[in-house]
Length: 336
Image 1 (cartoon, rainbow, N blue to C red):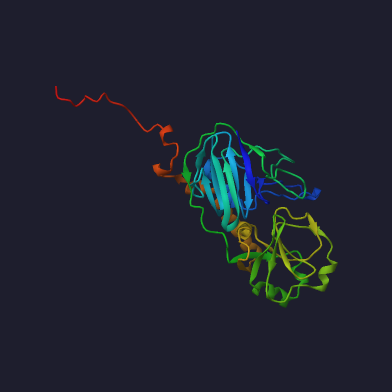
Image 2: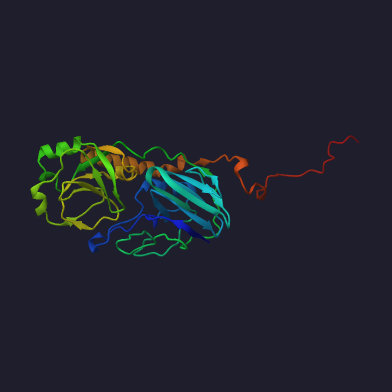
């Protein structure tokens, strides 16, 4: 009832919905960066909320199945193979004992997720299985690591069109905690600037490149440290913006020029390195409406799930299925 990690790359970890309500104690939420991808996998496997998954960033890994179960890959586009047979993203598949699951490089987006029926049952820390490397919580992946999951759970072979939301060219923001510290012309230039996702990114945050003048302000050096929210866009001492994500520091003193709205966090997280985009300012009311629309989308994911029509040519264990619905003697229609 487990996966054996044959090969994993830096950035792969176990994640669930994270640890809410602990930031006042210095522990940020962590959890899967792409909430939509988590919900899609759970809908496909008919799982309860807050099941744990493997999150990959940029590249995947290779795993050996030690107990038969059902799996599905969601999130960013990546090459998925079961014993060298390609499997579609968003397609539930069954892996038997001894099978090899391989996830290759991510070709569009940044975070992909491998789900197993019932979720992974790794150690829980502070009521969550999510990994926060900086805090020493959760489970990171390395060669030889055993990832347990529930035994003998049956699922149907379902499929979902996961939609296109990786590499969005516009991300909505609202005014941040220190927006008023920035001169109006600086803030307008921020909104007019085309940004590029740099290679300096992880689950703590994403540093942005740009070609215009930087966004440094003198008053930014005297900001009193306060709580940091996921999506806050922090301007450092060099005037460079960083969008803070799930494993961000709980408090900080750099000014935050704006904040990515909750409904667009998964879209921002899935922008590939070197991809370009712009920020679009919206009102708080518009942000709330967008969040309600996302919540409604998550509630209706079950309606997007359908049975997957599989090609028998690609079913390696075809003979193990019961393909005969009845039997006859063979002489029923012979003439007497």
